[in-house]
Length: 507
Image (cartoon, rainbow, N blue to C red):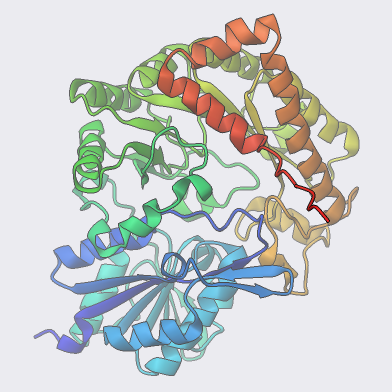
């Protein structure tokens, strides 16, 4: 017989503390927790999701050079107490936000010292040994969490042993023990859709234009994960360590069903696919496009993480555009071939140039992601990246500074070269405001290069649109409807806001 004290589960997404321009304050549904909740509900458990960040959007607290956004500690403790849950799961996705997760653990313990505290997410998976040094944490879920967390909750409710569950790390006799990994869920269609009914969806949709989805053509925007994992092994990415390069995709029908649900139940008008690698299976993508078109869903959609340039082709892009896709992002990373080899990404710059040109001519807005500031990258190599971006034909170029994320191979390189920070500041480092020096640059210099590159690129691109070539071959295909013209004007307003007029007061 199940123990009723274990039937109530509280899942917490902590507040966030970071520098203002770090990029971690994006407002999106916590899909990972929502999937966990859906699986638990399907198995008879009562679940509550507490998204401290979204519920406390009005609470902004300055802490030195950092900003904390989210519910206050007292508000979090009150919510924990009110829930009455004896099992608490806490998300720890990013190294830069690890401190917020640990603080949330402390709050749980203050309210309920006997609760079973489980932590999971990408950072928790990759840093489980150090995390379990904290005696307030009972279990770390490693990697994909639905089946593992369900097993934890079931065993706890039945007062059964927890120590041998696959896919967890746990303390045993004072030592950290990592159990055998759990097999990944291969049939993702069998998972229920995320339990969005447990989330304050109206808050995610509020002011989206001012937060995460300023680039959106239509609002509101919802996020979907149509696949998991990535078959590649880029040096700066920890995804392969979390998912073991095991890419799995949901069926086109299953994804289209979720899109229709979001449109019907929540009034969603645009989808952002949050996949690590959306385009691995082009047939699946084309099938999804056909589902969207045949069902006449009329949605707009994007893939913010980008499309691999060595997979995507013009024909697939045309089909995607016909199904509502309007803005393509390419993770190009570098304009220097030596750096590309170091990154281990099979990017061919000649092909990149061609696929950008194809995208522009068929009327897609084009964005490229670039990363520089690797440990042994000198000014000449960085200049190659800046020069390639300048001549690439992209509408927008986004520049980032390399970060040694826990679990990535780049982390090991920084460690060997003595470039890691030992003062705890690393937890607040970000892709746009780094704290890591390299062999050639100080951290502040890299951040300054990034900031200047971003602002200069936008001005150069706007001037290009005013040339006959830019106007006829690049801009006109993207503004051939009233909606598209409005979108273009919106982009201009975003990047070049009207100056505030100052009126002289009469004496």
